[in-house]
Length: 142
Image (cartoon, rainbow, N blue to C red):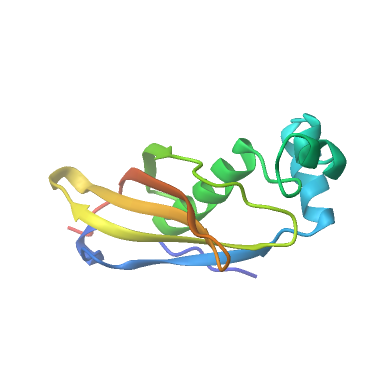
């Protein structure tokens, strides 16, 4: 059983790290991300097709990347928080066999409960492959 933590604006400090998570990109996860997002383009599930297209192997798709970043952010903000904006750049593909780490950090607190964050995906092989930023709104204790 998990406990939902409601984070409040008053408790957050600039520089705080978000509790991230890691996922191993094995063949089962790759197949699930294709079927779950309904993105059946072969570059995401057919290694021969991906290699013929100039890639080292199959790689995760945009919807899966967005889902990972949204999970990071919504887990952090809690039930009463609101994800206002998320933007990211896919600079390098996350390939079959890699382990991705999804991380984040508080950049700036604003009046009205808003918080600017950076969120990213990284691998041991390539460093940050997907940098991003987000704006969230948190409730206040007061």
